[in-house]
Each structure stands twice: as structure tokens, then as C-alpha cells.
Image (cartoon, rainbow, N blue to C red; front, side, top):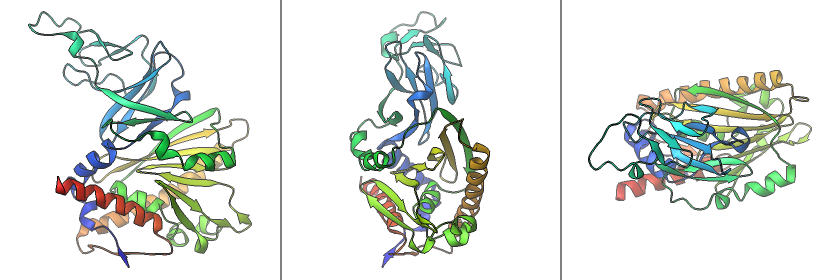
Length: 336
């Protein structure tokens, strides 16, 4: 019998502080796709584990990552989202200007200051790597190669011919729950008959399985007419690739605090063939159902009566793997 993580890890701000370092700074975080920043000066800005970051395309064609933080008084260089900054990044607080390779180009109207060397005040770098055009950043700069982490996804994508369609659409949903509450919900199909009645009518939920392959959780589910031709694959610690007939949806399960989670959905689709109104309606319905149950679970975790439960050996292997990794992070932090 395998017990769950203690409930305090889902409600304690200190637990989130340990995970911010031990999970999010230590590993790879999704930022976007290269086709969102194809030209010199194009940038993608967002937040990874509580750190504002950006990736910008240099005049040499190289994509570089930086903390979205001016070295003067911590002003932002770009608003979250996508855009083009021209030939330099300019702080939106006092106007300091940086070259696209991170060098401080001009401390605008700063004045003479003894000992001030602009060469020592370049932007804080962030390690960046790409896989199939998807951009990931590593805040701690010590993670293993991205290619090793995503290796189990390659044969899955190749077998289904998964590519990136020309149409893109971003949407976000906020949930009042700890990030782990939502991730664990994604990592099992046990809840489908109760929480998702429409989906349950389309799949054989009793034979829904989630299998771990390295740091990837692969969902396997028969439909009523045979094996589902989609692909649902989760990548440690908080990213999912959801492949459907219309195209691909990348789901970033992004914590914005110990008690809030933002789901960032990035859709890739063919505008000529995809009925995106129907796609978004179905997506919104599933998200609303998950939001309701995850927020209800979080409320009960916060209440203090429930301290730990037990995991199903039939349905919750993915949850068990995930909780094991989280337990290791906290054990290392407490031993340090």
C-alpha cells in the first residue's frame, strides 16, 4: 500500500519555496515555440517558477535567454507575451538599453559614478535549449541535457507524425489550487467517470492507464470504437503535449504561488481545416470540470482534517511516480 504525500505540502508556503528551487530552478521550464520568434529582435517573455524570463532572437539568428530584470533597479525589459524590441532591449522603468546579446549598451542619463563599469552590468543569463522548436529554459543552469529528458517523446511524436501546424492560439485559465493538485489530476484517468461525463461516454475509462517512461507519463485509453488515435503525454515537472485530430495543444501547468495555478494553453492548428470553435468549446468544458474538482480538493486539503490518503495500484502509477519525485525534493531540502 502506497500512501500519498502529506497534505501540508499542498498548503504550506514554505513547501512551495522549496519546490521553486528544487523543482523549477533545477529543471527545464517551457517558454514557447521558435516560430513565435523567427526574426531578429523577436522575443517571448513569461514566468517560469516565479522568475520573469525572456528569450530574444539576436541579429545573428541565435535565440538567447535572460531574466526579464534590468540591472539598475529591477525594472522589466518586456511585457509578458510576444513582440519585437528592434535592435535592443529597453528597460520600461528608467530606459537602460541592452544589446540583444545581453550587454549593457547605455545606462541612459545615469551620470558619472565612481567605480561603475557597464561591462559588469549585463543582463542575468538563463540557459536555453530547444527540442523540435519548443523552447525551454533552465534557471539554475545545471540541469541535464534537455534531449535526455524529452527522449521518450521522440518515438511517440515520430510514430504519429506530430508536427507544428501554422495556426497558433494562446489561452490561459486560473485555478485556486496548488500546482501539484492539478498535475496529479492530469496524471490519472481514475476520476473521468465521475468528473468528465462527456469524455467518459467516449472512452473506456475502466481501462485507462498512465505509464511512466523516464520522466514522461503516457496516457493509454481505448475509445468505444477502438484505440484512441490521439496522444496525451506529460513531461516532468509541469508540461503536457495533447495531440488531437485538429493538431497539438501544449499545456503548461504553471504555479503562480503556493495556492494558485495558471494553465497556459498553446494551440497549433491548421486554419483551413480545424473547427477551433468546437475545439475550444470542448477544451473549456473539460477545463471547467477539472477546475471545479481541483479547487474543491484544495479546499479540503487546506481544511486540516485530511492528512494523507492511499494511491490506487491500478490507476495511479503516474501520481505515485510524481509524488516520489516531490518527496525527494523535500527530503534533500530538509537535509541541506
